[in-house]
Length: 379
Image (cartoon, rainbow, N blue to C red; front, side):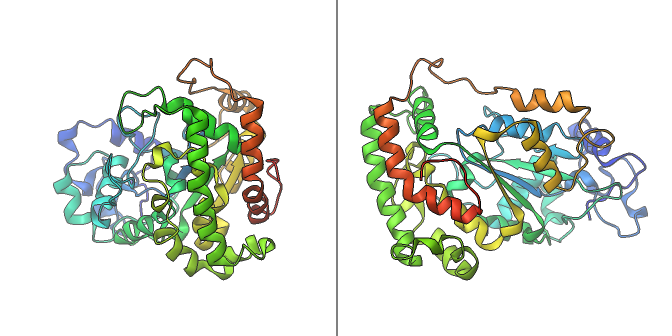
């Protein structure tokens, strides 16, 4: 499914569809500008695909730069973003100010509308008949990129994504999931600076950084204890890697049940410390998609990191159907997309950094075990 129904490349067809006037997008059978009924499989145009590449976080970890680097690849097409964001899509995010997830059918339609802004009436009839499938186009693999860095902390979201994709007869095991991490203490401080300079009351934090951190340490200690006790990691930290494979069903239940982050911090937008507890956030994604999850760290992000990621996606790197040249990749990797909300005036003190480093050490050790390699974060 989602194959080009024409002689153009998939990317050309996708871009051409998105440039069509709204009034000409009512018929899915001809959205690519050719007769879909002539296709031997009678399937939809490439442009009506559901996402099959998810950039899930972490917040304030260079994900905007990574997003734009991925979106610049000829075989990766970004979805339409949520207004007033840096490319973020938020298809599966709860409505602003709530913790209530939308139902699966609505998420499926939201995803399709983010890929191509068709009228809901056009989509509703066919979207739930299994016409959108994650497969390869005739001219090679391609990806539609969904970017929401808040997803990483929403472990139960994994199942919601799968349920929505299955309504389109899509096996979510075929999708890919990418996470970019950052030194936990620096990430927490960066998010705090951002949230103290926002006008929306839900986000704007009036506490001092250290007050927010001490509150956050209490929440996060309870959060990590919930996971450690349930998985036996309190007495056997070395099992941090194997539990992702041997306790996958248990992990799924914990992520959407008693160990869900929202149970420990009522406003995840201000959960600066908890959102740096990467091990527990990654567990639900690894539990079901171990070979489909790619994790990198901001501290080692460069053109070589992009090359490794593109190779993992089985896409051409440079040249035909790849980036223009190596210089273009270097420029993408070195771009600084988001400037600190305070203009870079604030700085994380050595004292606060040391306290946070000590707090995160046990979690960082588990993270290294889960990934099977050193992140370089304090252990």
